[in-house]
Length: 168
Image 1 (cartoon, rainbow, N blue to C red):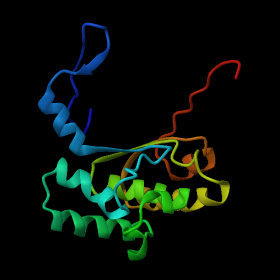
Image 2: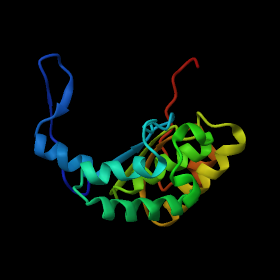
Image 3: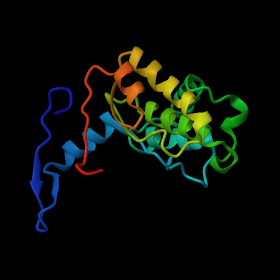
Image 4: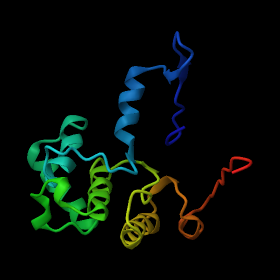
């Protein structure tokens, strides 16, 4: 359920679950964004272009509107104007993850999903990403976070679900 709307699922011929209504899926994609552990930035696009792409393609924003939104969210995560013209390969892991967060925020979603956002980072870069996520939590952003950073999870969460595999 997202914002009171139930997501209807059906099984395909292989038994896999899928969203029943393609229009509902399209709408869902505009309300949820995901930040992955390995950044998933497009290597052939600059930082600015990476953040602009989804608002243009999915939301139908003009390039100017998408640029303004991208600059706003890149600034929010601490990526300055000099870095916006660079390609992801020229950024540190922490910077790449902050760009990934800006890219997710540029969609102005109702829910942010994070899949181990700090696991691929050097230990000294983890704090900068966690600070941004804490700021988002303080602003009231709804986030679902898969993490091993238990102290962080306890500190910023309203609900914590701990999953464990027996014997490990």
